[in-house]
Image 1 (cartoon, one colour):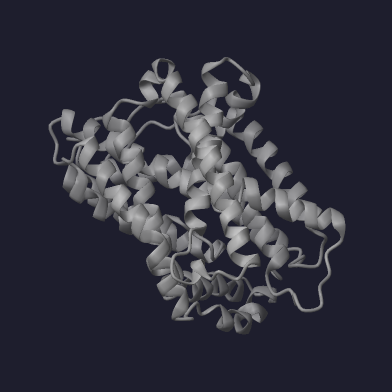
Image 2 (cartoon, rainbow, N blue to C red):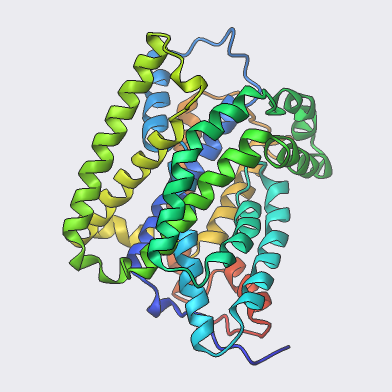
Length: 386
């Protein structure tokens, strides 16, 4: 092994608020991933949800739907900049290092896609290589590029959806694989469903990836202005973004409802759905930052930070637990339970992971998957036990 590369960033050198935001995002990820199993394969022409289920639908949609992966994308862009700067300061080639790191992330993504067909690691691995083009860019260049993408997203979204090529119609044909008690069939479902629903599905392939990259550039820009490391001095900026994003989210949501009810059909040509998602995500993220620097919810944020330090391990473990609960190889629950069951299960899994992460990190330097990934990336053995 090559011992030329230095140690990665240690736990005591991490920026706590970044881990807090990652921990919050993981909460939204497990909620919505388990929520998906409630909706998967359900006959919506005959299913009539009760009032309580409708309330849960609206709450999860407003607070969590697509807010977590967009926030994680922003944090990925920030983490990219931190890592590249760290490697450069050590006198090593950041391009070859990061390319190797993304290769191993893609390998992990292959495993995770077998566990759950909603994997995002593969997207980060591929788009991460594109982010290398901005390695030497300034915050201004990255941010302006992100704004250009942001303006293009509604038009792109409308055009791609007009092609009517989502491949979701083919997905039910694979459901018998997931309901099988054969683990090979269950894992095969994950890989095939990932291919159908994400890799060749045009709305995901084009629109979602552009949204992700826009968020990457936001995170990259935040690193360049040293935002998270100087959070206490950015309170005015945080408040401004908080109120601005909230107002924009409300106005855009109102316009979207009018567009639908009045049959203006604006969304047919310029679909602002992702603008609503992104403004809502920024509102939630700045809410957390504002509460954090105000010294509120210290215990809750400490728990989120613990989760965030083991993001990769906890994310893949959530998907493994989901497979064991929902697939035919496990308990075979599939979509047979009421919605509250899936949400409570997600909350329980998250709480258990908080305690497990706290126990693990009191004894070890890295989460188990992070340890494997870092050793492969740095091409050297790293000490796991403290």
